[in-house]
Image (tube, rainbow, N blue to C red; front, side, top):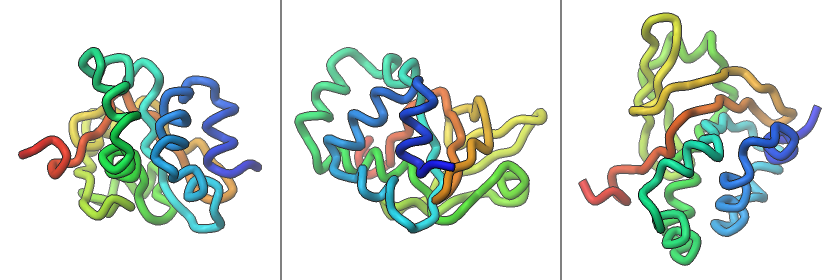
Length: 139
């Protein structure tokens, strides 16, 4: 198997996420021996952000790091775990709301499109939106 970074690269639809993780300097986290769960927005999810948002974030690495680390939860949280929990603590420091409904899952307002892409150091769940922590969103 491969680590979270290599697994995401091999999947082919996380180019923007990987670019953002590199810019945010958290690529090492995705390659580390620590076990994480990555809620990975697709390139299409990043494309849904308001125009200019991504370019702005790539220039503001502190904010970008908060956003990308908000997609990384501690531990190996697979789909059978998602059914049993209501939240997951993130590397960013706040928690994600996990909801199980109609045979699928939501994390905050994003739908989980695919679960349980396994890696040596954790698991990836594919999501259809970029998650923004409340602190960054200004709520």
